[in-house]
Image (cartoon, rainbow, N blue to C red; front, side):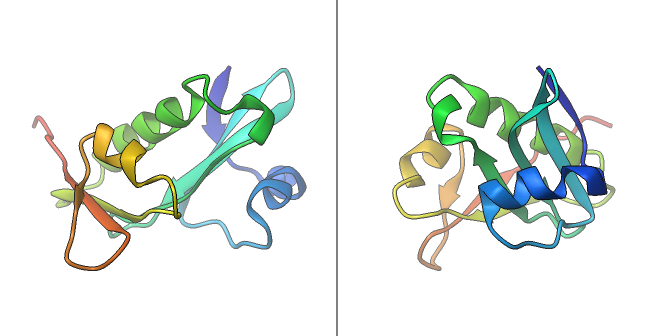
Length: 117
C-alpha cells in the first residue's frame, strides 16, 4: 500500500470514487499494485476534502490511514493551526473518534494541529 501524489492518469479511478471533481492543490491516492483504493487531499487553507475509500476496502483502517497521512502533510504547511472538514452524513462519529471537534456549523469539524518546530 502506497500513498502517493495524484497524477492526471489517476483521474478516471478517482472520479469513479468521488464523482466529477477538480483535485485541490494537495491530493493523494492510495495505490495497491496499480489499483486506486482511495484518494483525498486538502487545500492550502487547511480544509480536508474528498477523503474516499473504495466501498469494497472500507472498514480495514484505510480511511484512518488516509486521514492521518493527509494531516501529516497538512501540518507541514506554514502557519496552519487547525484542520477542518465537512463530514458526509453518517461519518461524524469517525471524525470525532479521530479527535475532530464539531463546530457551530452543522457537519463541520475541526482539529487542532500539534506541530513541532
